[in-house]
Length: 560
Image (cartoon, rainbow, N blue to C red; front, side, top):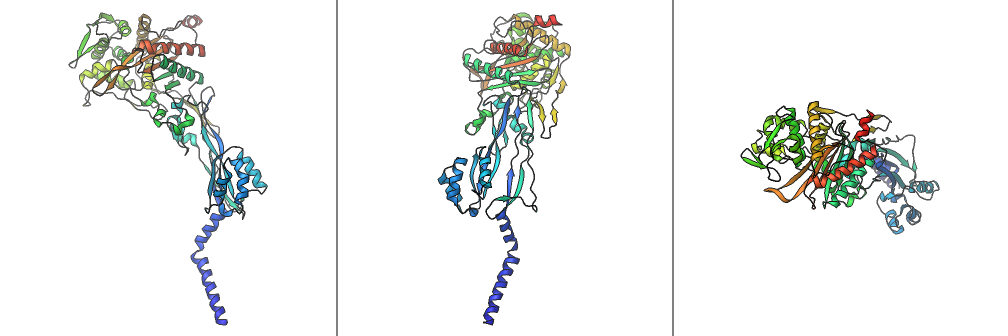
C-alpha cells in the first residue's frame, strides 16, 4: 500500500510539475484569453462640409455584436432575446451561439438603438458573454452631389478617390483599444489591475471652398446641357481667380456615393483632374498672351491671314478653310483663326512659347488637394518627340494634353492680372482639439505682366461682343472668353465625327470674380463650342450673378 501511495504521489507530482513548469506559459495565456478581452473603440471619421455648412460626408453609428459561445449555457434562450434587437433570425443566432468557437460575430450592423437595449439586458442578467461596440459607418447625405470631389470610404474605412483619399489620414483619426476582464458568466468588468487601453481619437472635419448652391447650379446646368445637345458626359468648373478657390466642380455622369459597393470604380475618378483632353481653340488665349507678354506682337498689330501657313513642312488651315486677309487680334479671336494663332506662336519662337506654356502650368501637377491628378502632356523642343510642326498644332490647342482644371486655372492667370495660383478645395481643417487651420491662397509664380493680362482681357471681351454666332453673352455684364471646338485623337489621326465643345470665360471683364469653364464631350446636335458650350456658360453665369448678388456693370460702375 505504501509503495502504491508513493507511486501515485510521484505521478501527481510529475503531472503538477509538467503543468506548472513546462506548460505554465500556455496555460497562463489560455486563462488570459478566457477572461481578458481587447475591444476596438472606433474613431469617428471627420465630417466633410461645404463652405455654407451643408453636410456632404458624415459617420452614423451601428453596432458590431459578438458572442463567446464557450461561456454560454443557454443559446436558445439568448437567441430569442437577441433576435428582434439585432434583426437576425432566431435560428441563425442559435447556430452561432452553439458554436464551438471561442468568439463568433453575430452581426456587423445592429441598429444604433441596439446598444441601449443590449446594455439593459446585460444589467438585468438576461444575456451574458456578449460583446457589442459602436462602429461608425460612412454616409453621404447628398448622394451624387459633388461625388467625384468627395470620393468614398471603403468597408475597411480607408478613403478612396477624391477628398476621402487625399485627406484620409486627417479624416480617419485613430482607433482606440479597451481592455476588459470578464467574470465566469462572461460579463465584463474593468479591474483595477488592468490598464484600460488607449482612447479613440476622432478624425478632423474639413470645410470646403465649395458653395452648395453654386455646385447645384453647375451640376443642374451641366445635365441640362448634355440633354439639350445630345451628349453623355462633361464638366463645369467655377473658380475664384484672385485666390484659386474652387467654388464648383461638376462632372457627369456621377455615381451615388452610398452605393459604391455596387458601382464600377472608374465612375469615381474625377475627369476634371484625371482625364486629359486636347482643349482646342480655348488654348488660343494662352498663345495670344504669350505673344503679347513676350513683346513679339503688340495689341494693335494687323496680321495677314492668307488662309494657310506652313510650319515644319506641314500646312495649317482655318477651320472653314478660308483666308481673311489683314485682321486685328480681336478679329482673329472672334473668327478663331488657326492661321493667326500659328503665326503668333511662330513669332514668339519655340523656346519662349513653350516656356510660357510651362509657366501657365501645363505639363505639371497643379497640386490641387484632390486625389488622382495627372500633369497632362506638353512636348518640348529637344525632347526627341517634338517636331517643328508641333508649334503650329499646339498654338490652337491640338497635340497637347491638359485637364479641365489646368485649363481653367490658366484662364484665371489672365483674369487675375497675371498670377498662377494653386487651386484648392479645402478652406479649413477643424482638428479634434478644436484648433482650426485656415488654408490661404498661394501664388505659384507670376506669368504675365499686369498690363498684358489687361490687353488680353480687352481683346477677348471685344471679340465675344462681335462674334455673332456665340451664345455666351450675358445681358448687363461684359464678359471675356474663348470658345473651343476640339477634335478627339484616335489611333492614326482624329475622329472624323466627334468633338469636344467648350467655352472658357470670366466676368465681369473689368474686374473678374468668376472663371467658368464648360466642357461638353461628343455633342450630337452641333459640334461647335459657340453653339453648345456657350449657352451653358451664359446660363451658369446668369444664375451665379443672381445668387451672389453681383451687380450689373452699369450699377457697379455707378457705385464707384
